[in-house]
Image 1: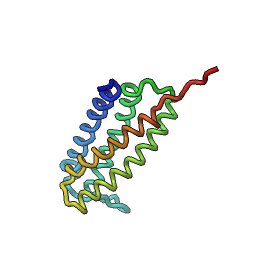
Image 2: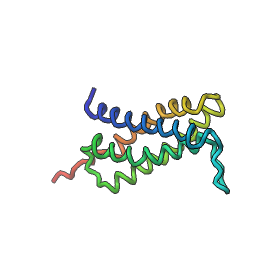
Image 3: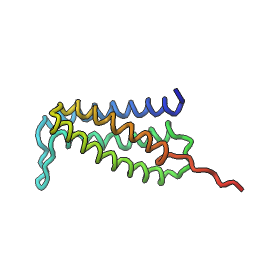
Image 4: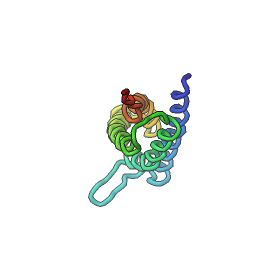
Length: 142
């Protein structure tokens, strides 16, 4: 296994486990499987749990990817953060669509739906991070 793939799997795996753990705790013990009412908005408990887990896994994921996995990237930190943010926005959309589909259309338990969704989104994310967010820009040859 290439070292880059191993580092991605280890860091991404650890962050994913953290994300699923925070999702589980949020869904079952913080939200008590109840709709989160914010006055003008209401979130299904699995959607609210996803948002809570995202607030933990986003900064952790960026830090791990930048400092441990894609250390050869010569893009500036702000560029990496902006691209990582764009990728995460896309991944949020994918997470929302897939988790909603798995829970509401396929009637899976929310935690199981989150695990299936994670497998799909992580595959997309790896390819995007490697070839876009943390790519190595060719140096100008003179």
